[in-house]
Length: 54
Image (cartoon, rainbow, N blue to C red; front, side):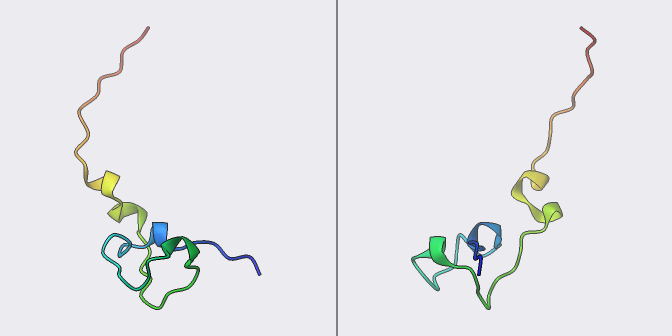
């Protein structure tokens, strides 16, 4: 069986206290996946950019 760590893609990763060994978690009943539209970078305002021909 090929397991992979799910903590980096969980919205509760920073506040979760279920385990101190998050690098070994491959299954969790409290797992809620980060949706691309909810990602932190999606909430940042991007500066206006202008195209420049070089």
